[in-house]
Amino acid sequence: MKMGSASAGLVSIFSNGYRSLGAPVSSWRTLASSSLYKHYKRNSKGAVLSCLSSSKIELACLSSKVDVAQTTTSSVNGYHKYDRLLPCPSENGPPRVEHLVVSEGGPVLEYICKSLDLPPLFVADLIHFGAVYYALVCPQPPPSATPEQIRIFKEVTAPSVLSKRTSIKGKTVREAQKTFRITHVEQFVEAGTYLRVHVHPKRFPRCYEIDWKSRIIAVADSYVVLDKPAGTSVGGTSDNIEESCATFASRALGFSTPLKTTHQIDNCTEGCVVLARTKEYCSIFHGKIREKKVKKLYLALTAAPVPIGIITHYMRPINVAPRLISEDFIKGWYLCKLEVMECKEVPWPDPVIQQKYCIEDFEWPSKDRAYECKINLLTGRTHQVRAQLAACGAPIVGDSMYMPAAIAEMANPGLSPFGKYKKYTTESDKEMAVTKWFARFGKEPKVAIGLQACQISWDDGEHFYEARSPWWRSGMA
Image 1 (cartoon, rainbow, N blue to C red):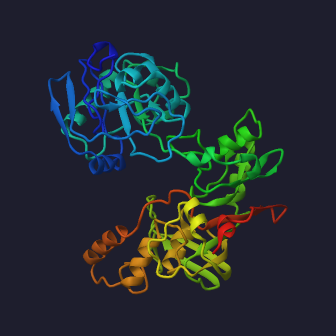
Image 2 (image 1 turned 180 degrees about the vertical axis):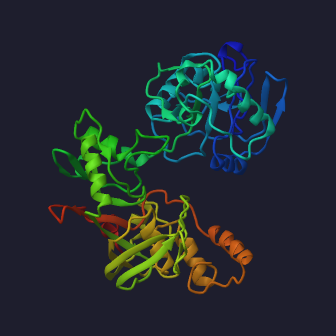
């Protein structure tokens, strides 16, 4: 159905730089987060928003075509045609997130198909992947929103409009703006419902290459211990809960009830993870982590030697990668401590194994030898081991995010505003130094880095499990 058709029941006001849409009914699409807005600014080649009237809005997009890496490559009206999310593409394309407000109640799949001109099977796959969310009331637009977008937001969230909706009676606006996953293709969405559609979810092709039964370490009545492969997500992402360790391990074991995530390790890290078989044990294990009854040991393959002993840093309390850390105490920053128990020289992984795991070295000066370190993680911060070792001048082999910054600091000591040789003298200089330093970091690794959660234990060792030999030992030069 053509997007200009009034029967579509939806209209797009902001389309993230992908396609030109228009309809004579009132609804809204906008950027719902600052991070998404930044992505749009970086990736769109240009967009023009023109207000045709108070009730009709059209977005003319002047953007380059994006390869959606789906099952077919033919195009319709200049856009790539695709029907299903499977088979999984080998590479992730750029994200595409669409924001909608429903103007006429009906099945969610029908609205999304008509609004975004997507095939029903594809939208059904998105819902199955957990890539579609709803909220009873449209969220507050970001500071970067245009006056026109703000006007329409106010229009669809006006008290006179909201007071007529029985579904939100007794709720505060904040409560009504909370998002939930759409779980069924026939789920009814009423007029005024906000929808967020992750059209290009992050994909994990490695999930289809793994012999999952061989990765099971232990199966107990209340939990499963998995040797997580690198290049996979433990419990999925915000736009993909299908291609996850929890899902594939559940299937491998023939469980009708999916396993539940109790803790995380990075996608590029392999090793021991505990998956709960029940909600009750999930809560119990979370309690053990809070009470510091869970002990984790890691093996790290570093590009330089690391001194034995306890290493302490402080991590910036901003939930954005890369994680910046300081050698000096900074008020409000998180304490990071790890203990290096062993550090031994080993051969650098050979080219064949590097290619298999997509290892990048970023021209590290010496690849004759590497160093395998056993690490006791004393505090559990996101990216902690990776960030701390890189700050010590010993980045993890294959860590395409942290190694470039470590190389830059080696070449120009003092480049890091939080290191031993920092050069800034004023707050203004510091802000500029932080911006320059942040730009030195790279992107997340494609598959693996030299990091394994080699042991996990809890209740004073009553439960003790070890992972198999790490990937790098299978191909050392």
